[in-house]
Length: 278
Image (tube, rainbow, N blue to C red; front, side, top):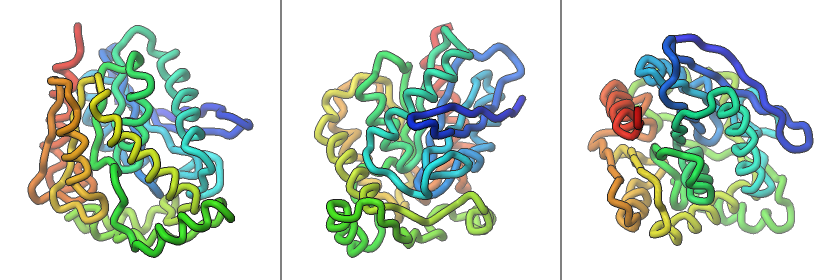
């Protein structure tokens, strides 16, 4: 595996940062990772390594307001900002690797973004992997969402702590400790970010029958941060036959960082393999 960094200019000259994990052999597919709220692409090095060893080129994007990308921490005025950032990033990385199938791999809020983006631009992708996508109201104090709805109209840039239950990320205490000690992780979210996330999740659920791409959904059934039933509802309303739901009975929020991670990443690699036309 070869690892390197990438930087892309977004709107208003905002710089987006990303990690690239390249296969030692000519890449047979491109996998673009979008992370969850408050974290960053550097936490996906194990995913990048596992998939690059399968012959795929893997790119992880730091969303605006996250990691080493520009923008206020957790600040978002409109979901279109995420969509436009994705478009520019995808154009940059596919320009380096033309002619190979592209897959989106999104986790949590990144899963929401991947589903939303692919539903609007399906011709660009060979398939989507959505890990614990936020397709309903995340399990944070309800009062925060009530405040978010109010302030989104009158003070949309107001940010507050998300009060994320860190121990619900993984059953592995080393993962939890690393998250807590990671200087690039933050716990901020703007009022408008909260309402834009819910609006997008509702749109995805309402348009599930329009989904056309191969789909792999992954969710730990003991996820206390994002309700697995929201993933199940979306999955059941998707009408394409090429869909799979990998349920992890004891799994917490981050399947790729939990005790089942080797099993999960093998399944993801196998699924991508099955959707590549050599």
